Amino acid sequence: MAVRIVQLGSKRAPDEGLRIGTVRRPPRGVPKAEFGTRDYYDVWLPTLAPSAPLVTQALAASTEAEWNTFARHFRAEMKQHDPSHVLDLLAALSKTTNFSVGCYCDDESRCHRSILRELLHERGASIK
Image 1 (tube, rainbow, N blue to C red):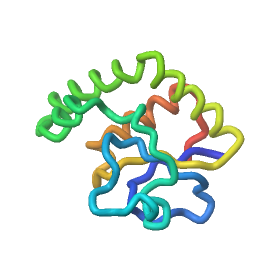
Image 2: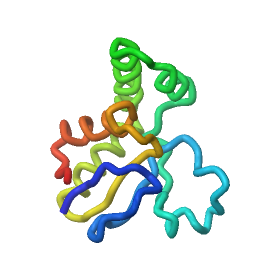
Image 3: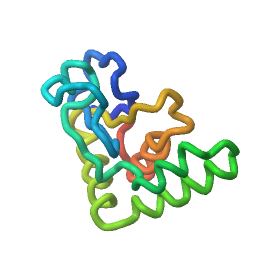
Image 4: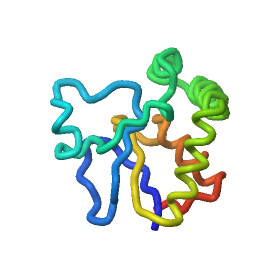
């Protein structure tokens, strides 16, 4: 059992389980009824998405220093009460069931999901 970190919209792995969208906005131009069947997500969890100002900051980050600043701010957001509890829950669930969390970004290394991977690992999650 484990959590996978995925790009939303990518083909699902056979044993991936429930796909959770940790994004600020639903996919554009996709009817809500098709989010799951088109491999975006089954459940939307914007609690683990960066705030709107941080999304802007991440998209504008062109240097490693700027990205590291975004990462530091995003980690601070994830220390807040609700996101922190959700991360703890997902880490615990990763021991008993398969599921995935993801975002739309092409490059995981410049996406908040890379930081979610680290945060889940730090909480002892089983990561695939």
